[in-house]
Amino acid sequence: MPILFRETKEFCDYRAIISELESELGPAFVPSIESWCGLRKRKYPIYNWHVYLALLDTEKEIIGICSHYEQPRGRYWIGWIGTVKRFRRKGYGTRMLDLVVDKARSFGFGEVYVHTDSSSAIDFYKANQFEIIGKYAFDDPQNSITDGSVVLRRCL
Image (cartoon, rainbow, N blue to C red; front, side):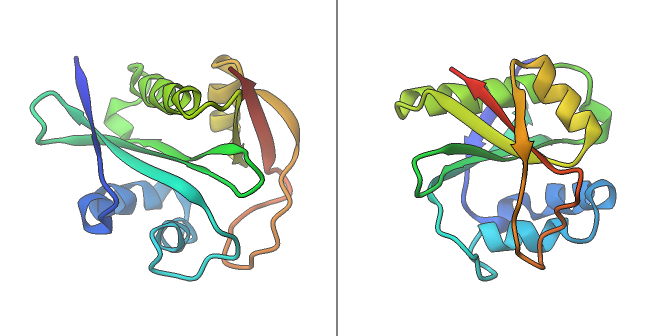
């Protein structure tokens, strides 16, 4: 089924899907997203931040969300990719990832980075040409990063 992407930076546009994903991703997920949106303090600046809602072609049902941004050191990162449970394993996550990769290319980046501690997310990224390049170290107590968190990179 075709999907459309709608860019937004309004937290109210995606609060419902964030809440739905929170039950799987844990209680630190929503505060983390709120910091991305400027509703909470961030420890480091981000630039060129984009959030896209993935919608079925009817534009009435949000089936996923993805974000990407540039860090000051000139790296392009996936902020998050999330798909509503009943739409998983149907190619929508890959289509959101393709959107992020295409945007990174259009901004002139040769690599895209992501960090995660989810084994299923690691498998997803590896299946989409990402490789683990190391552990993710971040000293923000609001962040739920665990010892199993890794950084993955895809060369474009």
